[in-house]
Image (cartoon, rainbow, N blue to C red; front, side, top):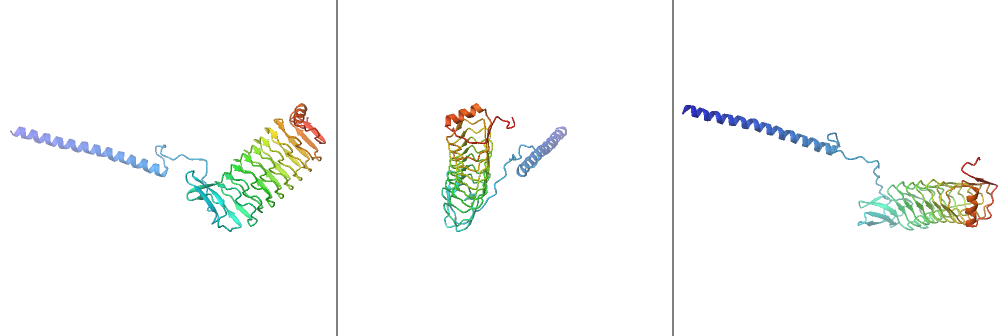
Length: 319
């Protein structure tokens, strides 16, 4: 009997010891697993080291700094579309206008048609990063002297800066593909212009009657120069049309009576009629194709009376 009781006590003690041992083991696993989960959570929140997959991906684009803009401007929110446009001056009486790039939590991406049309009170306009489109006649007839266009800009509408007689220079950002018709026409103080790297089309009369325009930089990628594009630019002395350009519109350089040097690429497929009408100052016309190709282009467009002291053909003007 004593032997049986001793055996039962021994079994109970053994069971108790095993329970303690396994319990500690499971507790260690839970503690370790919890520790690892905590570590992964902290790494995910702080972007720290760990598994590597929890670190947020880096991007090359810098966040756009929010610009509040002038008070009182009339802004339309397109909640369903997720953007806003500056649609009017509203109650704003500032002479130095700052366009906002956010409103009610939405990005402001456009400047409306005729927003500042013929407004003679405005002296400057700041357009922040985030603006993608300037619609037609937006600054037409204003007295702004200079304007810096944001790198986010993609489109400039027709007549957007027409008649800005105090505007002296303009550089087109690299995302813009089209410069609209008559965009800078009549900007009589404009001295220099540089197209962006993505500009494919310069619309008709885009720089017509820019009588002070002396320097034009056209970057590769340009495909089309519109009709009357540089009509009446009486101070323009040299134009190099980049390789790859396909067409020059009719009367593109009519009455550019100071033009001395014109370089035309062999890629040209269409040449508009009378594209050099009224130009008698030309000293050098360099066409990068053959004389036969030039003759065919001129014949097809009836440009029979081009006057220049020197005609140069081929890629290398020295040969």
